[in-house]
Image (cartoon, rainbow, N blue to C red):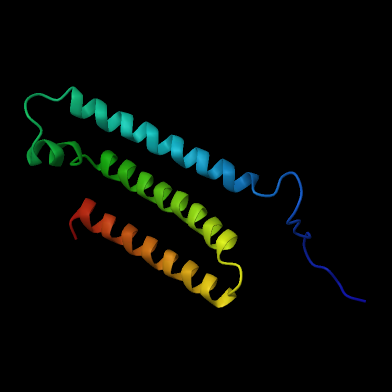
Length: 122
């Protein structure tokens, strides 16, 4: 007799994928709010928009932190979407799907690292 530890994962039914759907909507809403905040800062700024004004917008620590949170939300949003694409359309070769998923994770982590470098100038 086998012993089951933990709850059994149900992969079919009415609620499968609800968490991913909700995560994409929440991250999209966060990115939309950030875009509106950024547009408001640009619209209500004085004079022509140049490097100095862009650097001024992102010079405050709270803006750097908010921007990084949005980049993390974007990375998660992309991960959920790309993972679903790989699972839905790369079905015949498991090794290819795994390779694509690992490559996606590596790319997203590299982009997040680059964002840290750009925001905090390491």
